[in-house]
Length: 168
Ligand SMILES: [Cu+2]
Image 1 (cartoon, rainbow, N blue to C red):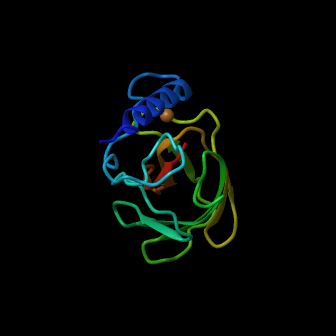
Image 2 (spheres, helix red, strand yellow; image 1 turned 135 degrees about the horizontal axis):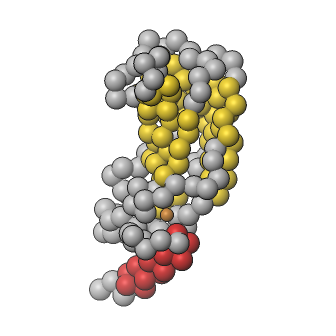
C-alpha cells in the first residue's frame, strides 16, 4: 500500500549515516511517518516532530527560571537551512529589560545523533540587547537544538533552546 516508503527510509538512513560520521543513531526520529507530507524527494522529514519549532521572525523562548527571554529576531536564511545561517538575537530579562554585552553562548547540537558542530557560532554584541550570531552551521538534515546561554551573576547560566528541522 505504501510502496515508496521503504525506499525513502533506506535513503534517509544512508544519507544520515554517511553525512554524520557516527553510527550511534543515524535514523531520523519518528513522529511524522504517517503524516504523509508532500515533498519532492526530501530524504529527511522532521517537520512533524513534536520537538521542533515553526520558524517565525521574533520567535521568543524563556529560560526555565523565567529570568531571561531570548528572541530569535531573524534567521538569514529564514527558516534556517542546511548549511550556514546568520541569526539576530535579542536578550532581555524577565521584565523585558535588554541585557547587553553578555558573554552569550550559542551551541548547535543534534540530540538524535549526539554531536555538535566543529564550526562554532560567532557572537557580536550590539546595542539594546541585540546580538549578531554568524556561522550557525547546521550541516546535516535532521533535528537541531540550538541552546542560547546567558551567564548569571552566580556563575551559572540561563538557557533557552530553539529546535529546528533541517530538511535534506
Ligand atoms: Cu547529525
